[in-house]
Length: 462
Ligand SMILES: Cc1cc2nc3c(=O)[nH]c(=O)nc-3n(C[C@H](O)[C@H](O)[C@H](O)COP(=O)(O)OP(=O)(O)OC[C@H]3O[C@@H](n4cnc5c(N)ncnc54)[C@H](O)[C@@H]3O)c2cc1C
Image (cartoon, protein in one colour):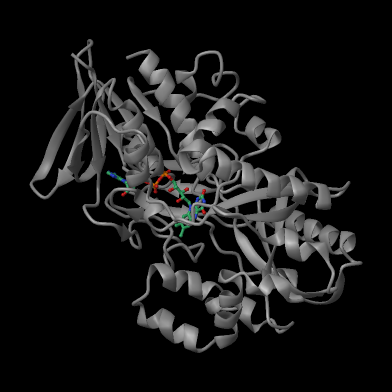
């Protein structure tokens, strides 16, 4: 008889993993939401701007119901910070790319990337190669299409606690659903509830209702300036290259104090700063996911310049013009003071603040960008550094650090140890919470690569 696996969370990692495991295990997925819905009120966030827009979601597919599926690899330096040796993920990245794109589509994208590298990479910066497929994928649907097979049972309800089996017997997950609390029995548990929910579940399973789950990191973003480029500047074409299957964006990456900052150019109408400051600065993308919010519609009407610039960006027309906004994303490292605080009977609280040291590093990188491309930039308007308004970029990472083994060589020597929850037998973690570093990359592609790696290890031990 097949062993039973309970996968908690049907988001990005849970969807990929459960479909990869379906033929070797009897798979049950526990998903809190029956319908796709943004999660606006499950975490408090005094740091701000976490619950004002869609930042996580529930339902089959999880947050990928609303994501952009921009795909980008971590470089070797980022991977080393995450405890993954050079080349350790290469074969799994290949699988992750094939999950989203066909070989010819990928070839097109790589061609655009290589052209950008030749045109831009110099002593000072490297190029971040981000691929945005034209189709926004709900990963539950995509994973089931890519990996069909035996039936997967879906149980709807909120997983509250894992109780691993003792003396070789099965364990169970306590799930609160419409009919009260039920037990879902399993031999193995895969936690894929996302970077904010998985640490809560781990702490609750270990009897730590007031735990502080440290190590949170993301790559917060902020608009910092507007510029006017020389008509022939190469920065225009490389910022957005359309291929048949995807848009390839190049960002310029600078490093200061061991922290990366990536600089992206977004089309603008002129040098006025109103469209990149205040609450309306991301309004069109906020509205796309949440179109009936009267508050957001009012905000939009109050900043028509931001609307016009967003349209220039979405239609890519703006990349022919001379005016651009500068959007930066800054790397964060895991800190003992940044993370998810549990409090018995209350909602967990997230603190994702940007530290003064991080701000200094981002600002130094922006200065280097301006110095390096001074010949391309005819005019600029800067927002003063203290008024940079950071927004969380929704790549909730690193919060399971204290519950899993230190990475060291666990990725290669004893593969499962990399994913294992150290104090919960038969339990592995695979989602944003496991990722100790991500540089300035959107982490989705890496999470899919890690899911392929974990599924391979689990199948070989089935
Ligand atoms: C608007 C937006 C755009 C984004 N764009 C990109 C992008 O372009 N590229 C990229 O790489 N990333 C992007 N991201 C981030 C990306 O979507 C997430 O990093 C990714 O979905 C994380 O995957 P996950 O498996 O960790 O969690 P999720 O996909 O969030 O899945 C977690 C699942 O677990 C469920 N769950 C949580 N707690 C419980 C519980 N206790 N019991 C049962 N179920 C539970 C949730 O309902 C959810 O379905 C974006 C995010 C947002 C919000």
